[in-house]
Amino acid sequence: MSAPGGAPVYGIPVLILKEGTQRTTGRDALRANIMAARILAEVLRTSLGPRGLDKMLVDSFGDITVTNDGATIVKEMEVQHPAAKLLVEVAKAQDAEVGDGTTTAVVLAGTLLEKAEALLDQNIHPTIIIEGYKKALAKALEEIDKAAIKVDPKDKEILSKIARSALVSKHIGSGPTMNRITELCVEAALTVAEPQPDGTYKLDVGDVKIEKKKGESLLDTILVKGIVLDKEVVHPGMPKRVEKAKIVLLDCPLEVEKPEITAKINITSPEQIKRFLEEETKLLKEMVDKIASVGANVVICQKGIDDVAQHFLAKKGILAVRRVKRSDMEKLEKATGGKIVSSIRDLTEKDLGYAELVEERKVGTDKMVFIEGCKNPRSVTILLRGANDMELDEAERSVHDALSAIRNIMKEPKIVSGGGAIEIELAMRLREYSKQFKGKEQMAIEKFAEALEEIPMILAETAGLDPMDAVVKLRTLHSKGHLHAGVNVLEGKIEEDMTKLNVLDPALVKKQVLKSATEAATAILKIDDIIAAAPPKKEKKKKEEEEFEKFKY
Image (tube, rainbow, N blue to C red):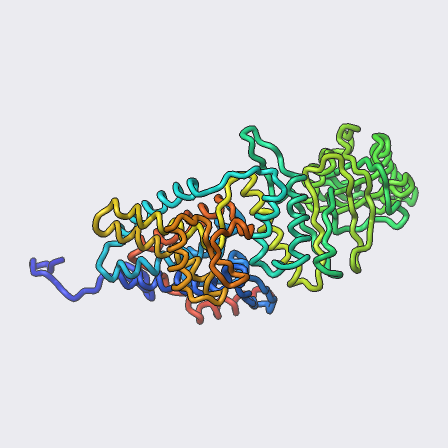
């Protein structure tokens, strides 16, 4: 820039960013991000494994969540730091994809970043570290497939072992309670799983409805080969029990619909009111007659049911339930084999679903409608019982994890040994693989191997063992060919074969853990500039609130 005469002018500030914007660049930005990610991983570290500890999370409304489920912890924590939020997304993605291994994924991502920091201190460029990590990931995924054991996706025993391994780190993970929940999860999964052309099975976890009711204990949890609705029969005059039920699933109200536009009716005499009401009653009676004419004796309605319609249904001896959730209607469709009908005029006998029994029962202090004994249910219900809401919520998360583990085996019938065995084996194979490279990339692959060893280290720590000593013993066993040697956390010792203890994990989960953790770590390592906009000023906010108050009144 120069003055009119041509002489350059200095000292004029050039503002590119908004006032109050903070900018951190280069290594400072990288270190800040790594630190945030490591702190989050540190929080979850103690929740890993069968001896993992629980976290108590209290939200801004004072609601309490007690859990050691990684995905739940990070969701409820309300993380603010942008880099830590990336790890929260990792946990969510892991949970959505395979439903298990969330804690491991976040802990591994934090450890990969911690190991990368040591390389950054040696002035190794982040791009080289990222490249090394990507090569290590590709090799690790390849090696998991080699080390995995193929199983039969319909083998009840294998599925039980897998479900137990998923449940053992949970609140309910011991004794008869765990056996009961495992048994129900396996039976539910085998009932709703659909065979695929390639010999695998498709299991949609959503097809297993989980209903919770306070009272009794977790041992009293039951599996219903059908659907349980947290609703009651709409009219006291209706039957409370219907055997050999023919079920209508309605997506339309059993009411006289109001016109879309605002309409006024001028009535000049009482006869007109009477005729008007009679017409309304006639329409409702026609609807009920149509339902009865196709042979239905149970009506499940997504919308409302008019009082007059309720009366006519009761007279015909038809059991009716109203305002049922859309998701439950879809599950009922799968369970009973019926079709959701949007217009009563089009209702035919073919649209009816079937169940051996539809009955209203008292569960705890509430009434619930049980639709059970379906011929070939593609959707079932697990009715959880427990002493309090916190226990029920944790049990629901545990059941979800167990079902997800079973689904993963049905999708890809391969298992690996747990207790840190596969991580030690991968670390050993990656160290061997790193020798093919020279210089800095080799160091990055070695650091990836070190990060994997952190998992058995944490397990050893929670078992009361010396972590370094445990890892050295495991390395020795694996170098002698003991592929399944791992940490027996419950007994606090190193075991030569974890498969004999039935500590098994789906290969799919381990692969997803590695993918999620590596992607998160590399995403954070790529960032070298943080530009944070200034938060809104309090005075301005206060003024806006005052304006809003004025407007309100």
